[in-house]
Image 1 (cartoon, helix red, strand yellow):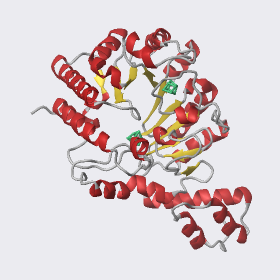
Image 2 (tube, protein in one colour; image 1 turned 120 degrees about the vertical axis):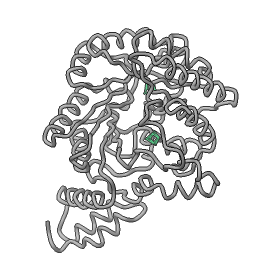
Image 3 (cartoon, helix red, strand yellow; image 1 turned 90 degrees about the vertical axis):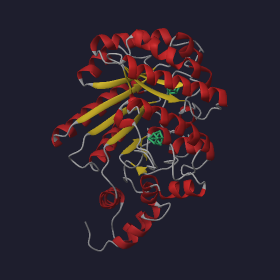
Image 4 (cartoon, protein in one colour; image 1 turned 45 degrees about the horizontal axis):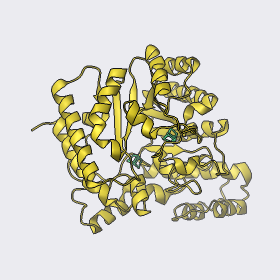
Length: 407
Ligand code: SF4
Ligand code: SF4
């Protein structure tokens, strides 16, 4: 490293609202640092600033393949799955290597570290998936930390070979299944607009024979809200153990549909509390998922979690990074230069702007600002709270709290 580098100028550029890599390179070029050496210099400088200014990271989400052969009506990734997009769609090995390096350059070395394999559909890049898992395991072994690997899949492409590999490497697989055949097939169709229920359930059962604990991610569309309880029961009967349930965002919910959703949520809570079904868990009702009363601004995005897309750009989570196919919203950096959008990370991790906007709306006493991605969908601003979400979240969190700590 050359002493003559004007580190002050570089830091000023990196700490601006929209840091210019060209300007940073120009500063370094004047000091005789160019090409790959300049890239590495920026990466190291940025790494140090992040380590000094933020909590360590603990999870990376990889969009291994920004393609999918389904056409779900509510897909929050439709902006990045658009076949007309010109940019790279499948994550190359170099980006996978750098993304995992980026995570491990920002972990504490003590806390549990995780990786989520995501798409579009991650199994469409199985060689990349294997590389990611293998590299992740090597880094975990070097540090001796505990770890987990998750994968979210539409379940259509699983083969016996994949099942063996995922089970051998203890990858926790979450199938996107929305309920019984009627509900699932209404929105989760393939490109020929055929329902996918039978294929997904068959592949889920193939996985279950090798790895008994199976998770399902249910996306609840407004028209299906009143059938949520029934849909969970149907999937339990098919062998699902763990549920991650989320209301579809970016679609219109009527007051009646909201009320039906809440009622079903209450039914589910009551069932979990009273029947205590063996071998069934619903993530929202797990104690650690329940948010404490009062405002806790923000979520894991940019604080402990990053997501990397196939082009190597980085944002706070896979939902944020999928908001726009042309431009990465809430960009934190890229895998070559690290998390160089330091002010964006400070805004997201520190929640100063989100909190100020909640205060201006008069809801800061009781609302934690919601999800950055759904805020953006509703308001065009990650840090402007979505007021519809606010009222629903309030009601739903109340029910959840009641289930976890009755009375
Ligand atoms: S399977 Fe997932 S990624 Fe593919 S279209 Fe459906 S919601 Fe989108
Ligand atoms: S921004 Fe939304 S989707 Fe992303 S981690 Fe936060 S709450 Fe979850």
